[in-house]
Image (cartoon, rainbow, N blue to C red; front, top):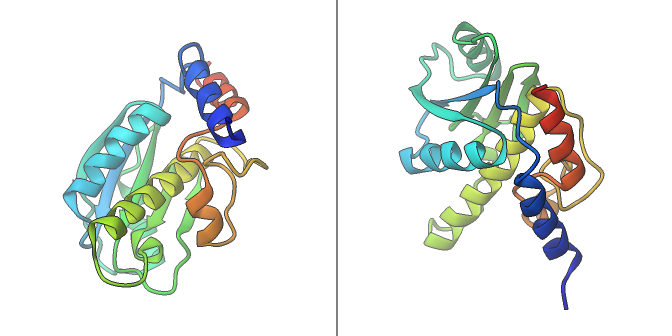
Length: 183
């Protein structure tokens, strides 16, 4: 029996064929702190598939590893027609998506890290959490608002249980809205 999640996933895949993402918008991924290279490359692949063209622009020079320091550095590399997504490791006491405004989203990788030992399963869980929050942050930086459907990356998860159930991509209505942004 198909679940609601699998039906939504199928609908999203079908809609992806005729609803283009905001193709005029590029996503520039920058890292701060000790973010694994494999994680940032995975985000390039995932965001290109979920949102639009993404590139890894490497480390972002930050003078002070604080929320305002990261934000200031990100603003210095902002480009017209692009969204800067910063994956930050080592920020303490910040929420998982702590800076979000037009053209800029900062994901606190540290806040998404599962508790316990670093195993293959925990690294995969971290990567999936970062994917979900990165899609949410990037779409929000493009001007999209939160979604009410749990199985959409734009749903604002209240805890890790909800985040872990959440889809990594956008639901069909949000895909349609995203496609209209580029027009």
